[in-house]
Length: 169
Image 1 (cartoon, rainbow, N blue to C red):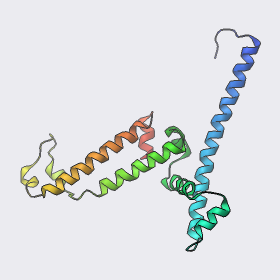
Image 2 (cartoon, rainbow, N blue to C red; image 1 turned 120 degrees about the vertical axis):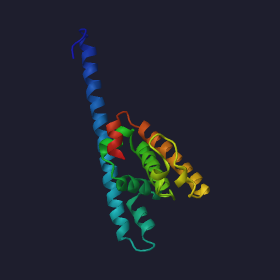
Image 3 (cartoon, one colour; image 1 turned 60 degrees about the horizontal axis):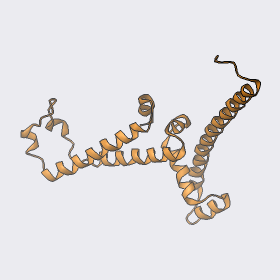
Image 4 (cartoon, rainbow, N blue to C red; image 1 turned 45 degrees about the vertical axis):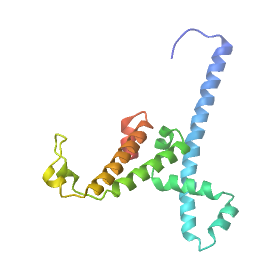
């Protein structure tokens, strides 16, 4: 990068800042990697705990139950550390995971499986099929699908790059 000539003190300051920012970015990546690693270790440890042993185990490990739950969620979500960083860190990744889980739950709860037969490619509906379906079921499904679409849009908006979003869902 070339630009205007800087005094020696400004040149030194620029290089110090560059190095410090690089160290901060590396530390953030390490933090995410270690958090995912800790989450996997907690999942494994919980599987080994008998009834009543989990909370004493966490106390011995020096970790609060809520933090353990979050680390386990992060690990179980299967997000790569780069994706967690792209989202803005662990807190944002947990928000993303929550929205992804909720949208999947809503989509799976759709009762009527014949939507393709009701909706025509031009957006109109096929009354012969639509009239055979309980209206209450259709209204509940539309609410679920609308909420699913809203959550998907919110998750999409959390990324700067659409390709990264596609990898995360």
